[in-house]
Length: 148
Image 1 (cartoon, rainbow, N blue to C red):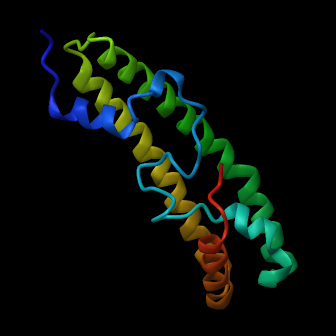
Image 2 (cartoon, rainbow, N blue to C red):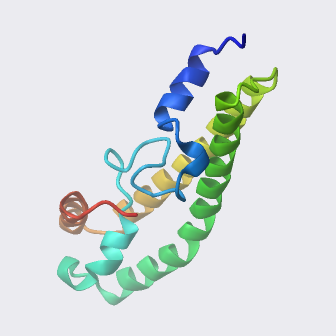
């Protein structure tokens, strides 16, 4: 009988034990720090430029961020999703090998890198927007439906 370790059980539980048939990663469900706690602000800013009162310089910087950041973070989400599915598939099939710890470490590193891109983006946005604009985007992000 294969003995499952606590991290494996936690991983399977977090993945809902249905990862083999899971859909593609959804931004509101996948992150090291969940978007409910650390929202993805760029879509909200892009959708509400006029309401937020962005000037031409701010709008140009938003465009630059939107051109840059998704290309950095999406591949990390896709890589993390592929790693999770492979790990979960093996665990659920009873194929827990000695490399599990290193595979989990790799997954954690990918999610951390994505979180670092995300947090750097928020820091960039905070310096771009006025305090009022930033508070406005946070309120809008909380009020909007989750990004899928």
